[in-house]
Length: 378
Ligand code: HEM
Image (cartoon, rainbow, N blue to C red; front, side):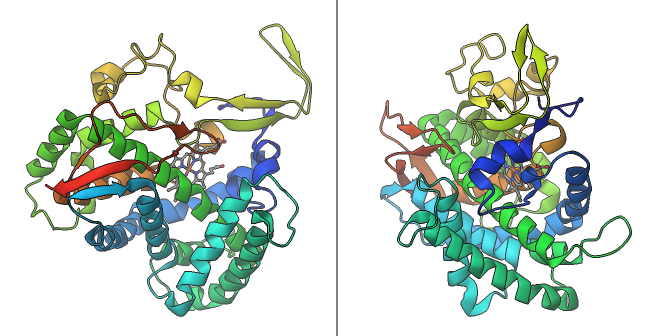
């Protein structure tokens, strides 16, 4: 299903049920040849030049955000990292010159994301969907006004990159395309990063030995503790990456990827009719004992080069795979490393012995109690 060599599975029809109303024509809501063209046009925003400048914003935003977090008392991690991720998206995706509209844009965006999973799907007044549809109207208006300015003025943020992105023939993407892709990108990044950083910090809190290992790795960079993490040192954080991967194996931020069959087909002797909904389920795959011995155990060494050798390409799929594989994967690793660098330099994190968060797994995992952790000085 991920490779979909025979073009049997529509991502647009699978995800459309949840996302179509608020995030129409985002990349996951396009299929086949049209999807390929749009993906190619968007990929300029994820090349190393732009990524370098997003990291500058991430370093500044994370350092500022963490400066507000309290030392020495219990702290709800999930809502705090959710706010931080939204602030980071506002600066690295939209640029720092957002001015007085910043709060309205952020709130509109939060309303859209909440509405995308609302039970009542009609935008009645007072409902989440009603607020989400109003939020979309504000975002569409804001982006439309900004596009000509961004083309003229330049800017290194993701939005400005998309305003300057072109099709193969050199022409710009239409305003409608930019608006839809931008809204979708912000949505795709926001809750997934919040969820993955939450499960990661929980694992570090519950496994102090790994917290220590990562701190040692950080010390090995020989940078001053408050220094921004340089782009050229990202690859030196191999242990951090392994520890983050293992957190995502255990708590995949996208636990299920829906598709719809576009033609009848047969699988293992079953006839699947066109129009059937089908799912790829990382939460299942990531716990298969034949791929992951003692699957419940947190063990980042599963991701050393030697341990990964020979493992099935799709045994580990927090970012999906094939045509729709996450376009922001490197952004996600970069933000996770940058966050960990600043966070572990500043704090020691712990949870009471034996504490296990009660995760609400769908549609994106979040701890029901907000993940209560203790932060003390590192
Ligand atoms: C830990 C963080 C993240 C996780 C776990 C994650 C996971 C995923 C998954 C599983 C898919 C594929 C869904 C499918 O095939 O049905 C996907 C697609 C996508 N993601 Fe992410 N994502 C993350 C962060 C980001 C970020 C930071 C961005 C943008 C900056 C982003 C942008 C996208 C886009 C544009 C797609 C659609 C790709 C396509 O359809 O071609 N994601 N992501």
